[in-house]
Amino acid sequence: MTRMAIEEKIKNLRAGKGWKHEKYDELIFNKFKMIMGGEVLAMGTGSAPMHPNVMDFLKVVFCCDMGEGFGMTECGLGACTLPNDVNTGTVGGPS
Image 1 (tube, helix red, strand yellow):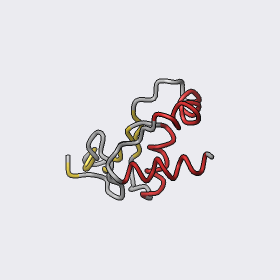
Image 2 (tube, rainbow, N blue to C red):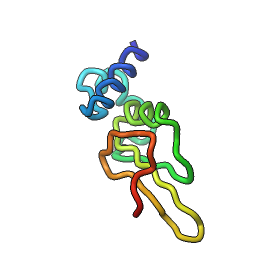
Image 3 (cartoon, helix red, strand yellow):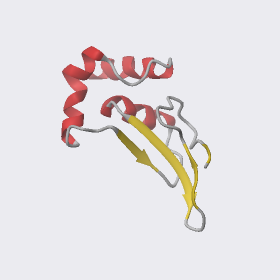
Image 4 (cartoon, rainbow, N blue to C red):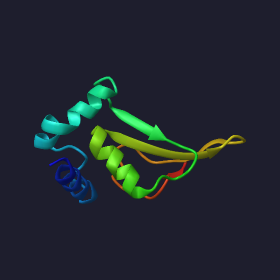
């Protein structure tokens, strides 16, 4: 059931419907949020682009916005995705 739930949530995410699912979040995915303290609102990653499948997986499992950024020590944050961006495979536009 968990695999089916993940696949359906990823399908909805890619269709622009967001990362939440009323039934599956209550039955399965809220438990993952509780492992992280229960109040996961957003998560982020940086330094290099993550594979789109990994980003989609993290968004649907933790039911939250997953930001992605890229930068260098010399200049700080160079690019970052916007909040609630459902697209993956990019680190966003220049900041």
